[in-house]
Image 1 (tube, rainbow, N blue to C red):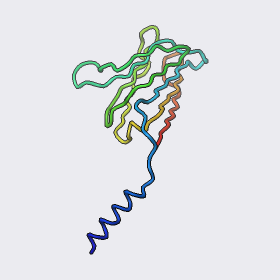
Image 2: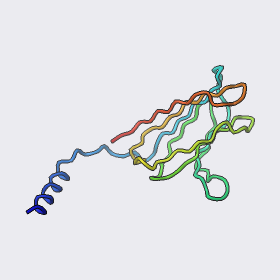
Image 3: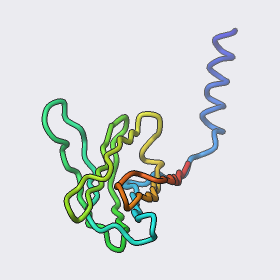
Image 4: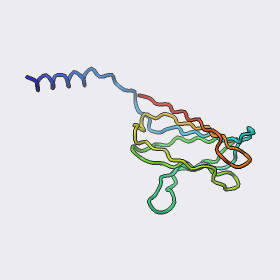
Length: 135
């Protein structure tokens, strides 16, 4: 009797579950990068996958335009990525990891980061991250 009840409960749950919205095939990745005096950083931002030996495998590189870059890119589940920002003098300002380990990347619509660097020493002054998900 207990197993029959469990089967009926599972069937009811699957029949009456709230449907989720359709998943996106790509995530809109956005970066804004400025100096602390308000001027835009010129350079490139790269999304790559780390390798055990050697440099990252580059997925996409975008040029900053007025301190802004965006790209729509499909992300894989449970994957580690590196985001690298290089200024126009080829100085690496920042490299940081992001992962899709705890989320369904198909539900990730947009990920945006706003970075402000100190012009005197290239140090990161602030970062604001905004993520939009669809379920």
